[in-house]
Amino acid sequence: MKPTLKLPTFEERLAEEDLVLSRSETKILQVNLGKLCNLACVHCHVNAGPHRQELMTRESVDRVIEWYGKASSINTLDLTGGAPEMNPDFKYLVSKIRAVRPHSTIIDRCNLTILLVPGFEDLVEFFVENRIQVVASMPCFTPDNVNKQRGEGVFDDSIKALQKLNEAGYGRDPQLLLDLVYNPLGGTLPPSQKSLEAEYKEALNSHFGIEFNQLYTITNMPIARFLSQLKREGKSEEYHQLLVESFNSSLIEGLMCRDTLSVDWEGRVFDCDFNQMLRVPLGDSKPRNLWDIEASDLPGTSIAVRDHCFGCTAGAGSSCGGALSH
Ligand code: SF4
Ligand code: SF4
Image 1 (cartoon, rainbow, N blue to C red):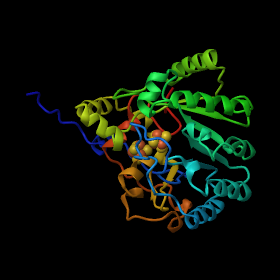
Image 2 (image 1 turned 120 degrees about the horizontal axis):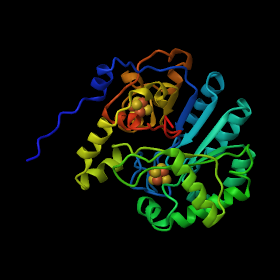
Image 3 (image 1 turned 90 degrees about the vertical axis):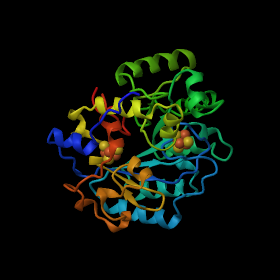
Image 4 (image 1 turned 180 degrees about the vertical axis):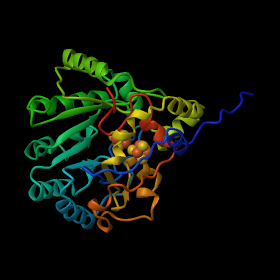
């Protein structure tokens, strides 16, 4: 039998290099508007899908708006889900934020196909009016890989949605940013972000006339649906070992949990979206709501780490904004 390798925990690995991970000034508020989604992708770390009922209520949305209006250091609202647009208060939230903080960056993490679903066809117009930055999942530029991860027909719909966004000025007008997100199909690290971006640009433009701004490469987190997939394939230990052995200490300063605050559909706060999924509260403290904390109290406080954190520090690193080193 193959001997089991004793690998360090994330905390032990930080200690080995005398590294301390703590929060800096919060610059991004990432809000999960719920788990409802029109897709059910195999790599989804939120376990989102069409039958999920969890959605942020209007009352909580109002509390988020009030809190954000006062948190002057934070200038980016990053909306995620599920499909964030499926929350009935999505447009209400965006419009209110535009009114209270007109110069904020508002990001919508969009699965693209939602833009073609009946009842959501006017979303692109709404995005343009509110200068929303669209960050869209597009795990490959060929149909097979996309359909395998996201479901049959998703590639064709994603292409149609990207063309619709381009026609409205996205990826062309400097005010209308369109970024794409790549993640590997299985238990491997993403390739170089820069060279993959060049390949995406070439392939999407020559075959479909599509233009976009940046490509973000994101490492698959060994949690939730992706972890179940690895376990089914008997590859979870191998993937964990790959992440641990690819630890890159130079990435600690730039980890997204340092300047991003994550909020779930009930208003609870976390150091990141992954900790949110695992229900590991902000700073390993008692569970708190966004409206129970002040952004100005966060710098210098500790970050709750677990072994999935190796997913952020492997190779060129990974965050909601893509690789951490280029
Ligand atoms: S589109 Fe996004 S939120 Fe929806 S199931 Fe796929 S990965 Fe999850
Ligand atoms: S998983 Fe979350 S807490 Fe851990 S390193 Fe990544 S962003 Fe930070």
